[in-house]
Amino acid sequence: MNSKTFTIVPAIFGCLLMGIGCATNNYKAHFIPRVPLPENLPENPIDPQIYRVSMDRHTEEVRRLESSGHQIIGLAEFNTSSSPSGKHLLKQAKRVGADVAVSSEKFDRRTQELANTREWVSGERITVNGITVETEGRWVNQVEVRNYQYYNYRATFLRRNTFEILP
Image (cartoon, rainbow, N blue to C red):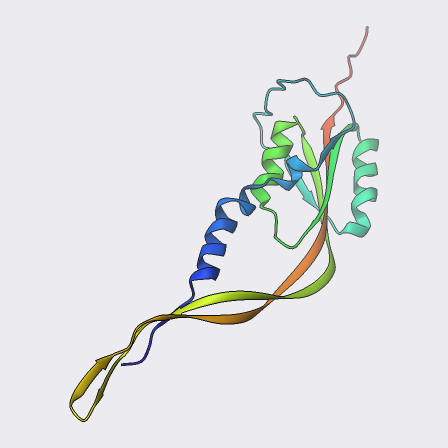
């Protein structure tokens, strides 16, 4: 019977990443308001529109929206190797009362890192000349190469200006 190899550390790391790292809303954590926002701002009940544009066109798109009657509420910029959830962008846009969010991403760099891990190798049953011996399982040190790709992310949150028309 072949030995079964279980990689424990990456599994634990993945669970931690799912439970902690992925839960961080970078759009919220890096949000910088451009206008004063009330403490208990009611969440926008309507899903805001998300405009995904290239980083090169981000400022141009924001200016276009401003010229059509939108006001910048705030923005968020960050650099990370983990892809932020699209739900996080929508959730932050609703939280700040935005009607529109302009979102961009641009590749930044690749990195590699060596990580020391331990891998559990199960014991085996070996039969030689009719005698069966069972070996014990053991931990084996491993060096793992981890590749990361970093991206710059930018989101600008806008809402439509409401003007009163006087008679």
